[in-house]
Amino acid sequence: MIWLKFTFTAFVVVLFCISLSKYADELAAAKRIGKGFVGFVLLGFITSIPELISTVSSTVYLNNPVLGTANIIGSNNANMFILFLSFIMAESLRRPSGKVDVESGTSLGYCFIITTVFILGVFFSGHPFYGRSLFVYLVFILFILSVIALYKANPSVEDEGQVEALGFFFYCKLIFFAAGLVVSSFYLSVVVNEIGTTTSIGSAMAGAIFLAWATSLPELVVTISSVIRGSVEMGIGNILGSNIFNMAVLALAETVSFSRISVFDRNDGIMIFGVFQCVLLGILLILLMQEKLRRVGKIAIMPLFAMILYCIGVSLL
Image 1 (cartoon, one colour):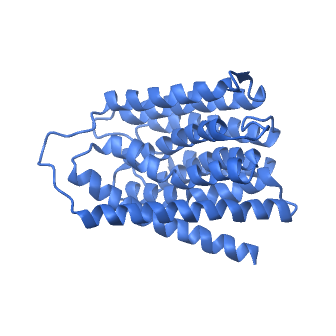
Image 2 (spheres, rainbow, N blue to C red; image 1 turned 90 degrees about the vertical axis):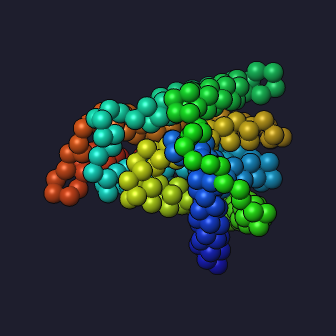
Image 3 (cartoon, rainbow, N blue to C red; image 1 turned 45 degrees about the vertical axis):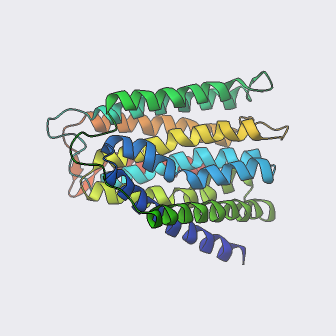
């Protein structure tokens, strides 16, 4: 029965997020918001709403910070798996000019730094500073800097065309789907917590795999559809933006938590997943520097290798 509840709730989360992403895309088009900024900020935030709700509820309501932390780092790794899966369908990861996309490079750099800070935070068990972990402050600072850097790398508003007016009903639907996503994401964290406590799986495993993949399904839909449409930079921006938002969510969960256990509490399985995140980001950097994806037949070698590496990381956990 519990697995049926998990499957149904995850399905509902996907439906709400697909609809929400559609309306957000229409909003961006009507208001003439730049594509790179849409992928990183708008889509990145929207597809991170499930992680936001499930992580905060796991930490505050369920008093299980380990489940929330495992959800974030597990979701970030699942997002990278999704990105590499979408690359198999892409012909090239470079712009027509042959240069690496500036927005992608900026997002990648900040994602690597903020992940490294996360690993150090878990290693030092969240060294306290004025009542909270020192690494919470570092994550918040890096998050703000990443948004500013991306804004400078790619101006958000295009000059061409007129800004379109959207009706009241449009915003009502946008709010409805956002509220539905919040409620379903909250219930999803409750179901996964039940899986971790009533089975032999444990909170870390349940969070890093079941909750992580369930909350990463929106990224799966948005990223693959973006790459298929030829907007590789939007797909990359969505994944890396979502990963950086997720780290900010973890810092937020630590800030509002009343638990004596820090979200940066020492956990070897979570640290392993953090290290694998950095390895996957390194592979992404190599891919972005290549003019063409090297293939064996129709299969891209490096993305496939990264996907296998992710599976190894899950098995180690």
